[in-house]
Image (cartoon, rainbow, N blue to C red; front, side, top):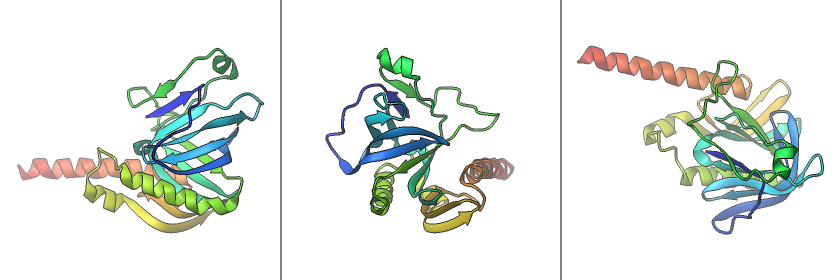
Length: 211
């Protein structure tokens, strides 16, 4: 689940890492700067200022929502995430009217251009030296919150650690990702989804034949 809120309350327990003045870029849109909290239960960004000068929204991500996290070196050093939802931020007018939390969960129709929904997030720290600690905290949080819909065997097959790849203008390292190929991260995410679906269909067909 993804929750977007106009109010902010700093996590009080289970904080693995917090980095103030962390810039957030959603897809290619800069949102603003706020504090990033990586906790044992979720990832929270909030308590800062949007690029237009108003208080930033608060964004909470549960770990099963996060399909990939990696250290990105170019075009700017960042913690790069792909989430399997189309993240929609409230407009400034709806924020000022106190719209409260705006949860986005898997019951919504999140189809985007006929393909499975996704959003790219880049958390750019004020101090580049914080990147490795951010990545390590994310990895720890992911380990504490395995996908309930995925078996341990699938986790071993679909995740790899310590990979580095350089494609076009984007360079990533220390990637922990869901079985992606060697093109841009979003394309790899799509290919992974298609491949996994195809594999599952083949397994089902084999089981039917065996019966």
